[in-house]
Image (tube, rainbow, N blue to C red; front, side, top):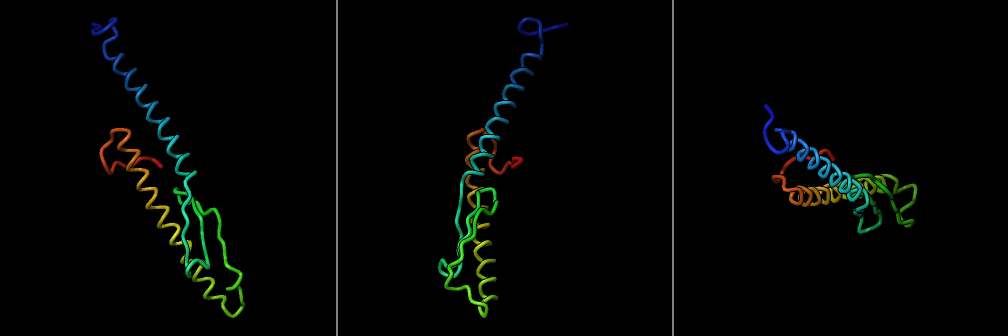
Length: 117
């Protein structure tokens, strides 16, 4: 026996759930694009090496001050590059966490819920 509005029973609830899921999926896609557009910069050696990445962690650029590009300083330069990339990754991860907290709050989800991006 069919119950509820128009004799559809739980189908009305299902339609509302599907619409809510579609809206959430659209918001998640929007946030994924937003995270890809946010850039952070890290550095090492008082700015001699700088790296830029997205809030999703994608390394976008690396800048090295030419004053440190001497063959005898190769190991130091390599260490500075690694340090700058790690600093950038840490900043990107922190920004990602901040944005995810905003997303989950805006969607009415509990704090700490893991979203697929």
